[in-house]
Length: 198
Image 1 (cartoon, rainbow, N blue to C red):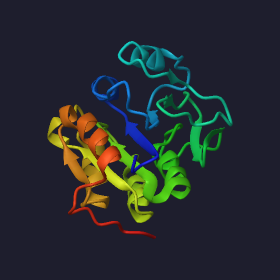
Image 2: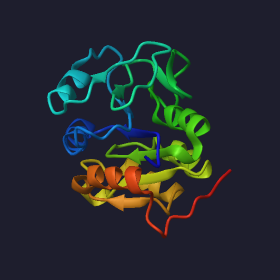
Image 3: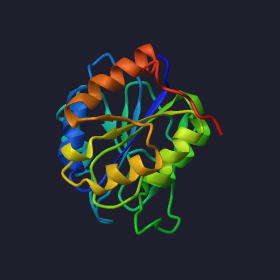
């Protein structure tokens, strides 16, 4: 595999978008995913349970210091920031960032520092601008960036904001993102992709 980790951010409309994404990943695709989906502070593990119905990969909300295992899908627990460190995940209760905890920007930024050129960042549907700064950080550290085509998003604000900060990101309809991730992770990014290291 060319990439070691995929990070995904979603907000308004994310439940349907994440279901499409997870369903599109083949069972033998080993690159782990770390997902931040905005939701209420008192939300239970409904999201991980729902996504688990659509994949044979293990879907879970991690505990602090859980290792990142191949093929697993990690969902940020409600009301915690999820940080990516090399080989494991951490949880914090630092203040919300732009009204969000978990924050996509916080998770993406930590992952970019830990995984650099071995990281893919994906911004999906949402009605705010969380994820745009984080995706910019992914790009600055040489990672590969993917943004849902705003025209196919239930809420276009978040992918549109991400594209303003990372205009060179790959833009795909929701239906094409999973297949693109599998191809890029296995075979490398398209030839026109230029890494912009920090």
